[in-house]
Structure formats: structure tokens, C-alpha cells
Length: 496
Image (tube, rainbow, N blue to C red; front, side, top):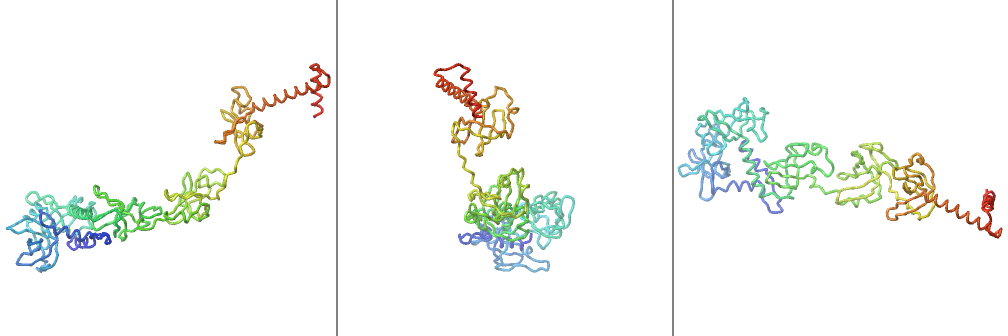
């Protein structure tokens, strides 16, 4: 990474909300870099060039303090010094030498360097400039001012890098992580430099970012779970659920790598360095006024988006989906799966049954809502005609003309205990029953065949007594049993 690129990253860093009076990330990073009261080896500062004298460049470290840089570090291949008084440059603190604060830009810039310089950089933790020459076994050969060094694949980038072609011939800052055998074994890492830069930026972001802030970012990669974006050297994640108010199949349907967007911070977890962002939060929530646009019993158009075992989802508008429950698909008939009635992509007209903005739910139906018929419960003692619906081990369900169902328990069937009721009663069989119990709260009705039989016997007895009285009245006495039976038979014959 070149000095110019580093400056570009800082200059294009994320700006905080100006209306809240906060500073931009680049401004805070610059101020942080200028705080030089206590310098430690390897610390990076941003300072102005005060003067150039002989082979030294003097920079302002604040107050009356100055630092010195070898002019050779800022001299190009033609021998021209590339900076002048007033220029702002970035430099690293090496050590105090002869009472002066020795600084360096990047060891191994344009001129050749000695092993001693690389060793000093190793001990001070100062980055060195190195050119990636070629790919070798396990990594890359890197030239630092003519000194051959080795960079493992895992240390060339933040996520490792085996695509050697994108690094070959490029010059980057590296950190010397191992200096062995008097310079015969020098291992460098670009990843360590990038990690340090990212941590510095994170430290600044921790003081400048807050939940709810809006940020301009650039999309850097797309994954199935969301999009990673760059906030000026630091990455944040826009989860797939935060890309749009409507359901998103894959992030590439909404975004492209390199696209510049504005997002809102919805979560900050500095312990895990996770920044969660939202793109849909930049758009008005379509559910905020959904009850006004979709009133109960209204008829609206929509498109079937997906089918499940329990119903069909319908897209009414961008970000708004409703559900047709399977019970509202069959127009009264029982269906096993919504695919028997509708298919994905089909345009339909649906009726709104209910709207629940708080839970983001809209209940729909293919048919208008039908008010259930009011069923009048019978009274105890009523005689009712019905049809056997189902025969169960505990009794018989009977469907009555009113649409109401009642139960004849086993004990009320008038059959001996242990009788196989399925051999006597079959579905569709017409029966007459007596109402023996009504539960008005639940609408359950208890019926009886036995009570009907008992009633018939009582009626027969009452008729017998009535006939006896008639005989007694006509003969002046009770008469014989034969007379009573004869009179009863004559009445039956006349009635028939």
C-alpha cells in the first residue's frame, strides 16, 4: 500500500452526522495522529514539514518538538526530494538519537538499505517498504531496498492471498516479524500493517459512531447472508434481512460490488468489532400506514410469491405480504395443499380478513368473508330427526336438519352393553332422538334413543289406561281383560 493510497483512505473516510456537530473519521484520525506528547517506537504520526537541511528533513511534532527524517527516504530515483516545507507527511517514530526524535516514513523507499536498517525497523516495529517480486513455495519473495525477504501467503492480506498475480510487482508496507540468522532469514507481514491500520481506525470510530447514524459506504463483497461494506478501511455488515422491506432472495438482487450506498447503524458491538447496518432503514416503513390502505373486507390485487403446507403468501406491494390460510383457499371444500388451487407467480384478487400492523401480518382469503348461520339450540325433551354422521367407540354423532351435531352416548342407544354399534348404525342412517341435555355455553347437545323408546312405552301404557276407562264407563264396571283388549283392537282397526 503506497503513502498516496493511505492518504486517500483517510481523506475518504466516513463522515459523521454534521447536524450533531461530530467530526468526520478522517479529521479525528488526523488529530489522533498529531498527538505526540508520548511517542513509542513504531507509532505513526501525521506532521508538517518544517524545513529541509542537508540530508535531513525536519517535521513539526507539536509545540517546540521536532522530528528528523533522512532525506534519502523522500528522494526519488533521479535524486529529487519529493517534499517541501508546508507539506504534510506520515512518519513513524524510531527512537531518540543524539537528542533528536528519529523518524522514518517507510524503510526501503527509493534507495537501497542495509540489514542494520531492517533490524532497527524490526526492533522498533516500524513498517518497511517492499516490492513483491515473485511467488515461491509457501508465499512471496519481497525485496526491501534490495534485501530479499519472505512473506507467507497468510501474511500478504487480511484474508490471506494465494492469487499471486494480483500482488506481483506491487509495493506495499510490511512489518518485519522475524529477523534471524543475522539477516539471512527475514520474514515480513503486510497483514500486520493492515491489522494495525484497521485497529487505529476502529479506535477512532468507537468515539465517533453511534446507533442511528447514517453513513455513506461502498459495497466490497456479497455473501448469501448479507453484504459487507467499507466505512473507510473498516468493514460493516448489512444482513440480508436489512437490505429491503420486501423479502430478498440473494443480496446480488439488490446490490453490486463497488456500489456506493447510504446506510444506518442499527447495532454496534465493539467487543467483537461488529458493525451492523441497514439499507432498508433509509426508506419509509410500508407497514406504518398499512391499515389505512388495506381495510377489512376490501378486495385487492396481489401476486402469489410462495406456497407452504399451511397456506399461500401474497405480495400486495413492495415490502407488504399477506397470507391466505389453507382454510380460505378451498371455497368450502377440503384441500391438502395450496398447490391444488394456486401457484407461485399467479396474479389473484383477494379479500382482506384482518390487518395486524404491530406483528406485520395481513390475513387474506380468495372468497369474501361469510358470516356463519346462527343456530338455535333445541330444548330438553324435543324430538329431533337426524342422520348418523359417525359411529365412535363412545357413542354416535348425529347431524340434525338445523346443521347442529349431537351425541348419543353408548348408554343412551338402548342397546345391551358391549353391542357393536357399527353393525346396527351406519353413516347416513335416519334416526329420531330425544334431547336429554343442552350445554348453551359450548353448544353441545346430548341425545338419546333409549329415552325415545321409554317415551314410546309410556305412551302405550297411557293409551291402555285410557282404553280401560272407556270400557268401564260403557259397561258400568271394569269388565274383563278380554273386553278391554277387544275394545283396544277395535280402536286400532278404526284408526287404520
